[in-house]
Length: 196
Image (cartoon, rainbow, N blue to C red; front, side, top):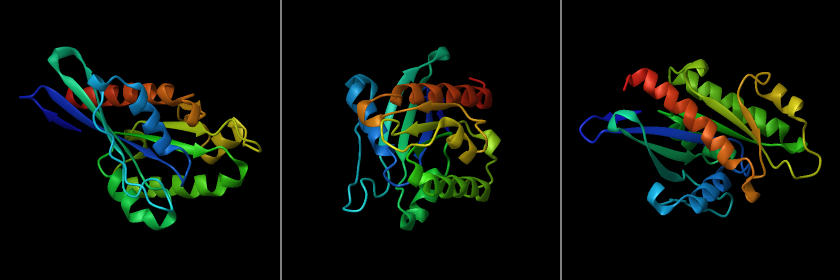
C-alpha cells in the first residue's frame, strides 16, 4: 500500500496467484474488456510459448472513496509454471490482497496444493502472516469434466476458511464477484491501517 496524501491517492496491489493455466490472466482479460476505459488503465501482458504470462499482468482500476481519496487497485498475475518460482516471489512482495485461482480439474489437485503451499511459504519468508492479508479463492473451470467438489477444494486450501467463488473465467462467470470480494476486503484492510 502506498498513500500519496498530496494527490489524495491510495495505491494497493492485488495479486492473482495459482498454478499454470488456471485462469489468472483470463480473469484480468475479462476485467479489462468489461470495464469502462475511464476506470481502467492499460493491460500489460507478456506472452511466451509455454505460458501466457512471463512476469505479470498489470491493470490499474480506480475507485473514489470518502475524504476525497482515490484508490487505485493494481492487479497482477504471477506465472504459474514451476521454473518461474523466483518471479512469483517477486510479484507477491508487497501484496495487499491475493486472489488464489485454483484449477478445479481433479488431475490438478497436486499442482493447486503445491502452489498454495509455496505462496504461504513466500509470505512467511517476507514476514507476512497469512491472517494479515485478505485472500479470496476462485474455483475456476467449473464447466469441465471430472472436477473436484467444493468440499474437496476446501480441503486443499486450509479447510474452507477463506471466501470463495466458483467460476468459469473464460465466460466471465465469477470473475467480477471475485474482484468485488477481494477489492472490498483490501479496502477495509487498507482503511484500517491508514485510518483515512
